[in-house]
Picture 1: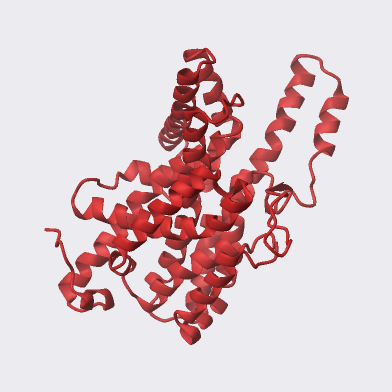
Picture 2: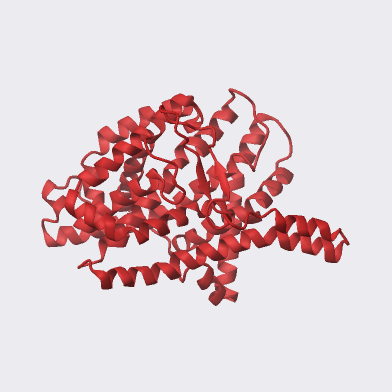
Length: 391
């Protein structure tokens, strides 16, 4: 049964049976968290493309800010923490051999899907133009123009840019970038961090908490140059997970010790961020990293509490489909879901627009899940390749 209070000694592994139980809760909590976080990612991308009408200063506008600009922005940082933790957690001895084994596994599970999904995103509009030429007799010049419009040099790295108007207090640009398939920026940064894991391991061993603390100063102050593939948020949150993984410290139990003050601070910062539209205003942008950091800890604490109290349980299909949904959702599915909900809930009043906004990401996730299950049944080999054999 779940223990209401854990002695501090359990944080450092005291007690074999309790340590096994705590590690089990940690694993199950983070596994369960994957699907809700993927829903959060869909909500982030649903803010702009899904609906364009806005009632200024209305509850509809605030709901969109809450779900697409503030609350859900915890998702990707959580994924970096989870990735850093699990990368090192099961390594008993860090050496060149273990590093090579990890690289080979990530080549299959990260690099190959990254290249494939970006290629799909690039090829899809070209294929649509080709069909237009072959079936509808449209001019070949449209197809040629579509091919020429692809920034082939940067397509697989940094062809897409956003937040180009964001600067820190020194005037440095805080623009962010991604490959042609924008959500793949997470995998891009993750690949860079995986290559740099020997450096991260050495720094964690040498500096211990000093390494994530140093990165935290850069992160919270927004003092970091704009480097495609090595954003400060990526390396900071990955290093937090790496610290726990390298030192074999149970992250869930550690976060639990500060759950109440951190949750209170997160609630206060959440209200402020909603008021100032997340990182889209100067004040919101300053507070944003503090909100995300407290929200990451609070999110993981909530997940652990729900799992430990048997309120939720990881569903194998949802967990395994999360990566596929993440890769697919912006490739036609979210756009199609928006059109479907516009047909099912037509109208421009505030209530209908709110319902459309809230249901579009849910429909998108459902459609992606249906496609995942269909491929798993009919084309399991193809599904294995495009998801990095996560099945």
